[in-house]
Image (cartoon, rainbow, N blue to C red; front, side, top):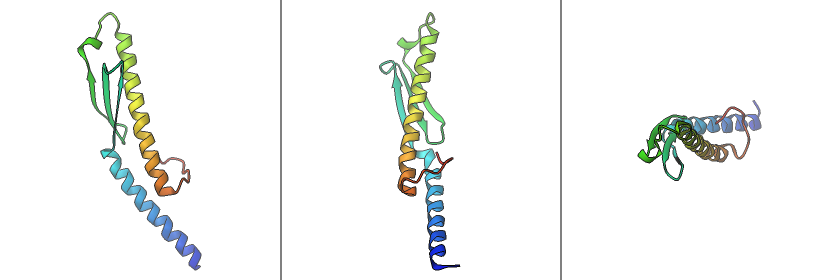
Length: 104
């Protein structure tokens, strides 16, 4: 094996180790989002798990369930967007901006 190829293989292995560590740390990364002026608050982690969902009493209107559903969806989607963005930024530090499909 040529010296250049060996160096590339070593770099690839190091990048793979760093990405594995980042994926392990994903569960610890969280993002929070609110909707309806704080009526609904959601916290998610980097593994796309909803960790908490808080709904203020005044947001619960039996006559307008659709509005509450929309607020929850909005907050969940925004929190997921935030955590994905944070993970993408961390990944770009490892890959040097190289876009590798399927990673976050």
